[in-house]
Image 1 (cartoon, rainbow, N blue to C red):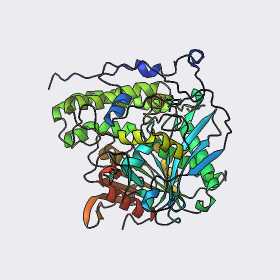
Image 2: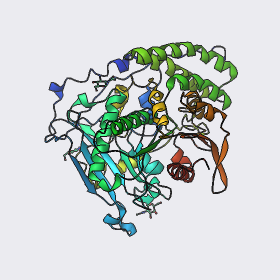
Image 3: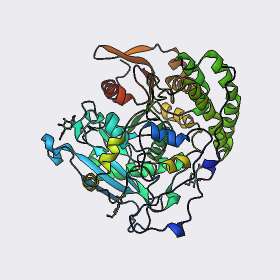
Image 4: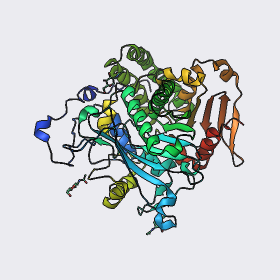
Length: 497
Ligand SMILES: *[C@@H]1O[C@H](CO)[C@@H](O)[C@H](O)[C@H]1NC(C)=O
Ligand SMILES: *[C@@H]1O[C@H](CO)[C@@H](O)[C@H](O)[C@H]1NC(C)=O
Ligand SMILES: *[C@@H]1O[C@H](CO)[C@@H](O)[C@H](O)[C@H]1NC(C)=O
């Protein structure tokens, strides 16, 4: 293995992101979509974004939902409707309390944010939970249908109830964001986000409008949850909400906690332990590790520079650090990096295409109040626009949330490489807050669900870290019962028994 060559990705592609086709030549009529072809080529087999999409068998027809000449943008207006996919199962539309809507984001040129809202199957007094899928640029509908939503899509494209949907213990919102993702769209590409400030401002505006539309839920406890790249979104949003509350902006939001599953939160810590995790899992040898670790100083240096200087220095960091990951994969072969117990068939690690087919059905779109839009499952345009954000450390806002008693749950399926439990455990332990010593000396206990040990839990005051057994990147998909129990116990403040 001494001849291991270190791979470097050609990075030119992302730098050209904003050189979109000149709009004069591509003005299309109302509701026609522009296909933003980007000349994405890399010396490595695939760019990260292509790899992301092919892993999930998601090949959206368009790279982003930017549509031309959409009239009638009224900033701040929210249009919501009730729908019923499962009326045949006996309940009436009213009983189900299933809603879909569009919110015209007030601090944008013309962006409309799409969301699903499912009232709890158990009690309207259950907490309100928002779920954010990562990517960046992947629709939260992927989680809805494959992880923790009220129903799943069968192969014949009919829906079946999910016995472990998070709507059993919460009133749950799934948002397509940032703008351009899923069914969210704009008619102006300036609305494509590049940083967490504008992402979290949009989400905050949305929550204000949501609670205005549903005033009966403002008294409920509120929790922010999500996965993967939402390890960036979630601390930014929690902090935005907390600041809004403190400044008495708008409706007070009863924020009690935030939970991140297999997240990317502090890349400067997480990238440095990739090879440790890979050796532990037998994906690479010690010798491979020594070779690959030669890339670490460059990753460390550029990540620090990104944190202080921002801008394009962050692309340099992304490139330097991603090469660590790529080199692990080039040794480990065709593993599923979301679940190292598995192989990927071709590039396909999962097949989430049924949900896309379902959502692109005309009658389904009509039921949801979606117009002539194509569902962009994972947007490469949104992904590329966020590349300067990737290596940013989002843990910086967390200590002040903890000092004010807002709960934090960091959980991780132990079989995921991409956002592995080890890197997450490292940053949580290194986090500087008044309870750090207490957390360090807390004993790790078993997390038991129905008599079965499902994970290792470390808790101290508002902070909990939970490693979940026999789960990859998508914990609610791999361990649905465990994930539901985790949410229930944590929101009830009973996780640490
Ligand atoms: C579709 O598949 C589901 C789950 O496998 C099954 O319960 C249902 O009966 C099927 N529906 C039709 C119309 O075949
Ligand atoms: C975030 O992006 C917006 C434009 O979308 C820009 O105005 C703002 O300065 C950026 N903020 C930071 C902190 O980079
Ligand atoms: C929009 O409508 C036109 C005309 O009905 C149709 O040809 C086109 O495929 C539709 N586009 C999408 C994305 O649904």
